[in-house]
Image 1: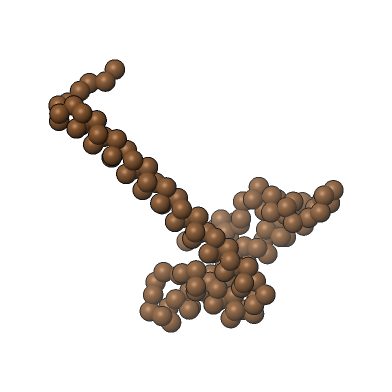
Image 2: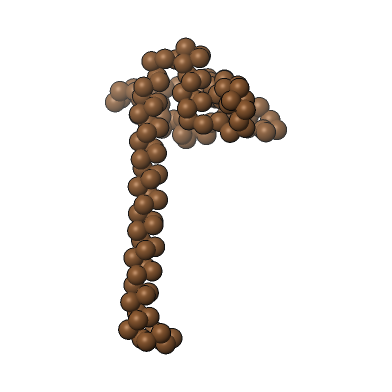
Length: 129
């Protein structure tokens, strides 16, 4: 848990980048407005997490899942964000699976190469310089 209330704030650089991406070209935001957005975002995340935690506890689970967060969005009446959130979650899962598959493929290729080298050397250890 956070020791101080300020520990719960989102990083300013991240908040600034998100705000700049959301605003049209040439529009700026005052420092106090950026601070207000950061604080509101932190409070929203805490509220959503608390709601998702209640859902997980009702299911006798200690871990909050993506589905718990989606259900919490419905519960706190942010229904219009559920579809984009679900789409983002599916894209994230797909990207993670692709990374995992690529890593597995690289490991298998490395193993296959090592096996070929070992067969060519008749099982002898060879020092390569």
